Length: 251
Ligand SMILES: Nc1ncnc2c1ncn2[C@@H]1O[C@H](COP(=O)(O)OP(=O)(O)OP(=O)(O)O)[C@@H](O)[C@H]1O
Image (cartoon, rainbow, N blue to C red; front, side, top):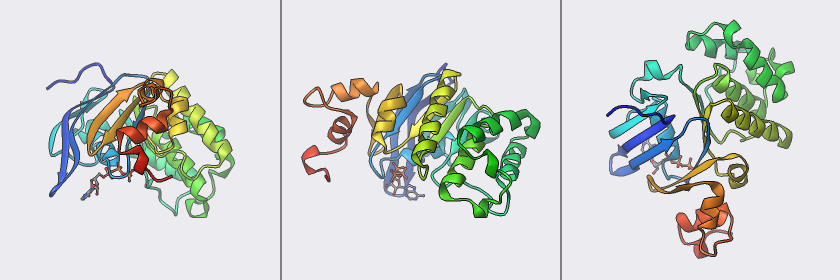
């Protein structure tokens, strides 16, 4: 199979853990320069999908391409992608600035090639003044900001974000949403996994809903909401209908 023009393509992507099928024959086509909201209930397979597409684990079968690079070609993939995982890997004994240097080094990118962009993002998130403090003195939100900067500083073609606003105060969360929209406006593709549906309604161009490892619906946030049973529901109504019986959903 060859890559096509999509930023992200998956064909029959499958991941099994023993008897558990975490991702089950997933087909995806994410166009370039969009914010793609990747939704699904706990255990649906979102993290597993992102781990496959970012080369952290290999699929059991099927293919995935990101910016034209096969997901098992980890060495090539690294310059094309940025990843903010659920539990960001940060070295507590480094300062924020040293951590960002280190992340650039890992990609073989000189710090001066990413410095301006990294500092701009730090400024937008209100972290710039704290960059010379050690990470072990950072709050949860400050660590999250550092991890986000680390994911985007090298200007990758595709950024994978897992709950990027976790731990951020309302001002920082707003700034981060604006940064995500700016990324897409500059042709970066943002693959956004979150349970915060209003964020998806606000900033996603397309939404895919995963359930039991399968894509059960895809479209614009408005399109999905309009597809809910009464036709005038919101994304939450559509999500609950697509992923279980809304009458039995916890209120
Ligand atoms: N390393 C692993 N070993 C065994 N099972 C796993 C492993 N990783 C994930 N799973 C299983 O795969 C399924 C999908 O998990 P995954 O973490 O991808 O879901 P998720 O959609 O990201 O969930 P959440 O919203 O809770 O983060 C779950 O049944 C989970 O228990």
